[in-house]
Image (cartoon, rainbow, N blue to C red; front, side, top):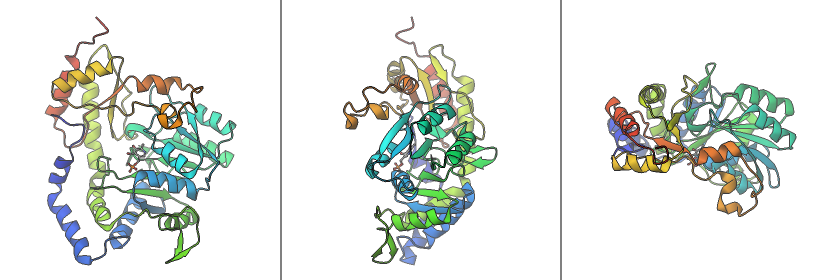
Length: 369
Ligand SMILES: Cc1ncc(COP(=O)(O)O)c(C=O)c1O
């Protein structure tokens, strides 16, 4: 089976470096919030181009703690898209805040200036934008400007966009803060969970360092509400420092794979999103197809895995019962019924990519005859 991701292949490619990083941590005897975490935080801050990186336990915590650090509290309303897997919404709910759902643009699956302006007009207290599938939100510069003018904090969720750049600037460097996930399958992934919040605001970074560790001002002295235990461990930090220097190279390979799909997939019932350049790090290769379940089943028969990111828009999740029954997000809902993710990861060979494209091109759509 050709999988959506192949972690074993990645681990195999770095076997010696991983072993040496792990044994260095083990022999140091320091396993939580130590020198490896500090080193990775400074390396990643430099890579993204922010003054601070505060690592945490995972990407969902990064969103939650960033929002808390930015002043979001229970009862506040936070703008977010509804097509990004519910992670931001989960973080908003964990604070006791309310999501304000925005629709997305049909050609990028990302939020637009118009949607942000509508959310601001509705009185949201914070905005989260998601750089989805590896694509930097095309209008992020304008969105950052508008949020600043309204004095509303902007958080970028970069869980799928490590290294995507607009005008040479990395995603994560546009907002007041940015959250990253280092879940193993991400473009920069650990071998377990991990996450980080990036910011240029020294006071916010200081608050985040307290929030990730019980709200401690110092050991056993709790000064901040909303604190918890959310720390990156030394082993994961050391492994991330092994992968980080190659991030631009592996992103380039992902782009080559995406370009090969763009050049070879030819089917009247399959649509591709616009290709990207440096603004796109091809975290996921997502296509559109009106009978995607049939295409997915056909690929499975040919030993090719596919998946849907994501099948249920946030406002239709059962956790909300009928709270958002009146809300319609036409593009989000249409895309949820049509999107299909096909394999895209740096270790794929050109032969693997061609096998997927040939499989897709050979499929007959049940509804189109
Ligand atoms: C867009 C997006 N945001 C947030 C997250 C949450 O990250 P984590 O799984 O590390 O909590 C993910 C990842 O899974 C994601 O894809």
